Length: 156
Image (tube, rainbow, N blue to C red; front, side, top):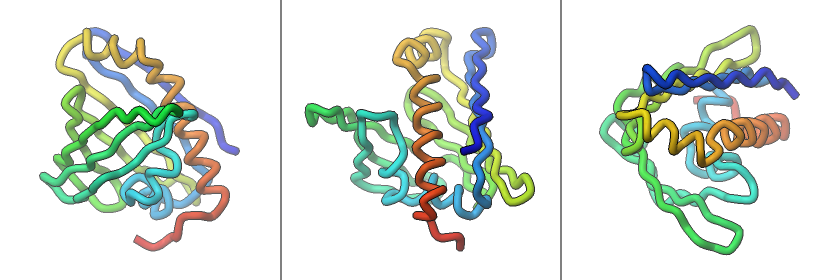
């Protein structure tokens, strides 16, 4: 398993940065981030699961999903896509922050870089207090397991 997880915050810039390299080609990692059936298999940290209700992966489209707690309680979320460059980048607004997700080929591997900018320091701190760093690391581990199981086809 490749584990070179980087996580940084910048309170003055109201931002956080996460990145990790995965032992899979860009096409495979891109699909894992952009296809709901695959996202539901790794997004969110255990013991929570993810349940997509709809996804329109187009600029202006939205991903509606819920984080589902072990007791069945659902926490709905929505991301609205603001930019899409197939195979290399997409951005989305979540209502709490603006996400910019980049996919960089490094040999036969992929570096995923996520930069999130918040409207204020309180929103950044709220995400940190909720365990966002550990949750991101755990989600990335789950993605690595999915990719290693060869559960994602390679074509865009």
